[in-house]
Length: 91
Image (cartoon, rainbow, N blue to C red; front, side, top):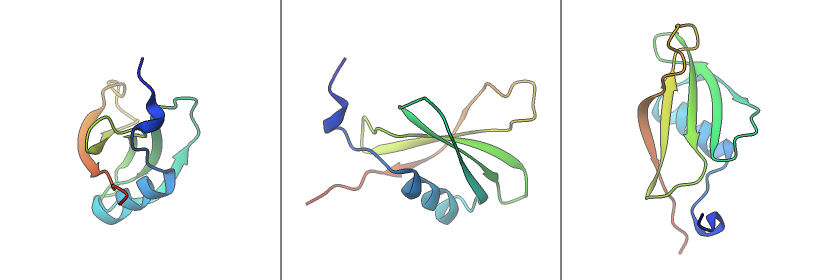
């Protein structure tokens, strides 16, 4: 397993701002999780559906993938890719 400290990370605040500004998600709430690889959020999409979002906290490429799912459906374990947040490089 590689050292993840050198890989770009994203904060919960930056991820929530991206969800709000670029995907137009409202009523965003961060969900507490023991999963250190992802950040989880709940919110409402542009048409008012309640949705769950999972953001890769550590980018292994030049972006943090965002996945979404509807919490009400029987197949709610299925996450679908929704977007990607570009990594901000220092320097």
